[in-house]
Length: 332
Ligand SMILES: [Zn+2]
Image 1 (cartoon, helix red, strand yellow):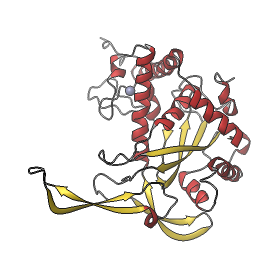
Image 2 (cartoon, rainbow, N blue to C red):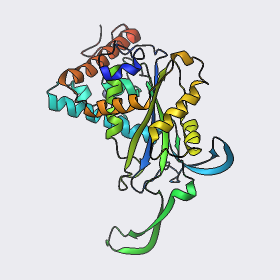
Image 3 (cartoon, rainbow, N blue to C red):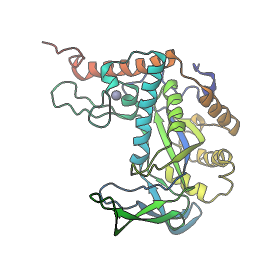
Image 4 (cartoon, rainbow, N blue to C red):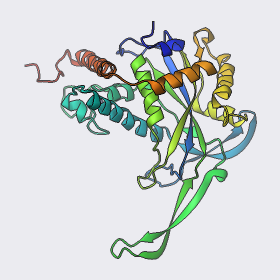
């Protein structure tokens, strides 16, 4: 039985506690990410916008250039928002947090015992011999591609370079390449072996995260439209497939949930275990999204998220070193 009745369409696909070894239980969230501002997606080193040559759609092999939103550009803001929300709720509800959890931050000071670390993964950066186990992520992202062609959505924005010393604008012009507002990046986020609390908290995070993109002075406003959810013992669809399917269909702007359900039903027939597969109907999707929106985490809920993470960290400690990595001292 699920603890939260609005999760009943996904009954049987949750873990009661975070397992040391991942099970096959998989939940995929299909999201359409929509830009609401001029946004820059590029790699830090080359400062070039990421683009890929892809088929126009699932039934049109004509090659087109599409903009790419790399997996890391989706994961990082959501990772930060997840821990920020957790700490804010803990603070507001009077849940005491350990110092390690209070100070947990990307990338070099991950505590490996908070709800963020156990879901998004954490690599140990300690140099000592003890306590060196890593946490494998249970949330997976992949690159998302624009539905629109790159030519349709890219714009060069020119601005005067300001001379730092004189604060005057010189003649030098700088150009940045931007993705314009109302471009769409369908993305499939895959969650494995998760608890009910984790799904609720991740969906809340997805709704709350509205800032993506490369540069801090360009906010990169985006919203996430949660258009579909599928669950089972395997992954049903990839971000690229979802992109190509949407690209060949109309009506997804007006009714993304209906179109996404159609797509998922098509992919059901390609699954290796179609009997296990759960695809949420439009009605179930609408009810679930409303329930998540209305859900106010209680003190109990926030404590449970923390407790699951702590228990997992303690089990991992034990397996890794017979408990010698436990906080509070080493075994003599
Ligand atoms: Zn942490």
